[in-house]
Image 1: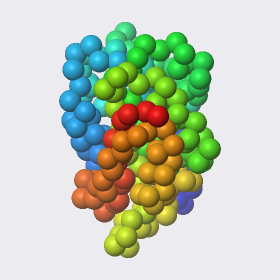
Image 2 (image 1 turned 60 degrees about the vertical axis):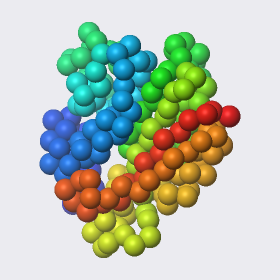
Image 3 (image 1 turned 45 degrees about the vertical axis):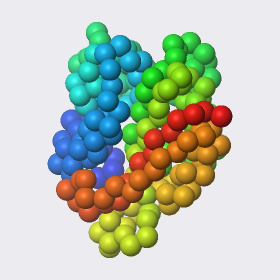
Image 4 (image 1 turned 90 degrees about the vertical axis):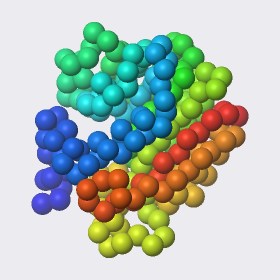
Length: 203
């Protein structure tokens, strides 16, 4: 039954509806609000999905990457005239073509990637970052004192690499000199724990 529910998330409408029903949209909005984006900022969003939060971002130069064609088609249909959406894995070749990036968004992505893939992605994010730029990630995590419902949510997340906060931080330290991390609870409607990182000063 759980596997069937996860497969349904491939349906764009159901995915967006579920995100808003459980309050996952609040998580993304909180991250976006913390970034204080300015008009003209260059924004890279890796794992953008259908980018249902795009209107919250503002007047920026936006590049969105995702590997799910249905999600990208949806995003292009809504905002393709205002943003660059690509159904591709973000790679070194893409990094070489982008202008310096002010804000990098990694919303709910790292817990879907292995350590090696996470390290490579974070390296690329550091490479494209403009002076004074910031990378923000937020992911389901395991954390001390987690309640039963929250732990169940972490254990049954679609991501195969749900980690402890210190494990996410260790990955980030390979590419960034300054990392500000916080456990977020009480953001979504269902008890859940998330690890948010602000990464700056690429090394």
